[in-house]
Image 1 (tube, rainbow, N blue to C red):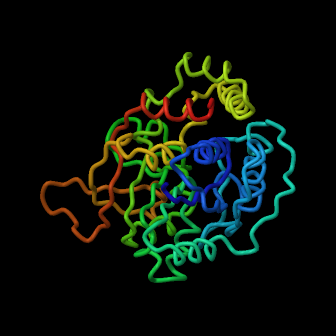
Image 2: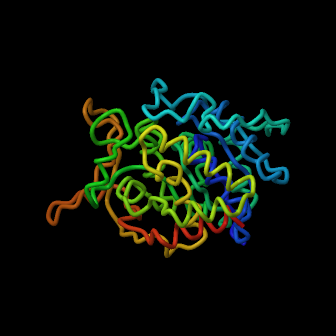
Length: 315
């Protein structure tokens, strides 16, 4: 069984990813940490607890991170997740307690207790992980792997067609805290990025057969996923908007879901037009060898991903 920590900012797509991970028999969710992204960390943590209640999950540590990025103001998300951050699903407040630890401290504690065993699924900005790296210089060597939902790497037109940051070329999870993203990219943690090239690809969207499977299942989590679907499609968006963060979970379950290649990339932290852009050096000559080298997804087995997700939620 693979041990994971979810570092997230629910948000509709994060909430579904939490359910996907909790219901996957091959994954052991050791903790969930809240980062400021779709919502401030305190509100995201409350939504994590609500999500755990949907399936009466066993007690799991849930910790709150910073309510703003490392060094800059917290920006407004251009995509609305609803007043409750969960697609106006009206989930009641949870009675579950929060872990008393600061989220980066919890990350450091758990990774130190099990060096080389914990994979982090980061589906929000990288603030918590950057702080963990700064707090404990050995943290980067003890994390087994990070799957990060963020960035845009120029593999296809979808990398920028559906850019979600507040400029033409940035993706939201990097744009919110580009300094944190840069810190983690430079940290030497084994790292796979899933950018807009993949998460906004048209083949990721649900088919009618998937919707019928969820309707037939009738369990609470399937109904919740359908409610989220109705929320986004009712506002003119495609179904991928609720599925994005579940790619990290699917990759942790089965690495063959993603097709990746190594790239040289860094994060722009100053440009007025390009703040938060993940800049990839693809030159044949004069390439900057000092840029961090990471694995980035250029495509995915979308049918396998959708089957894994829907069958797990409907089970």
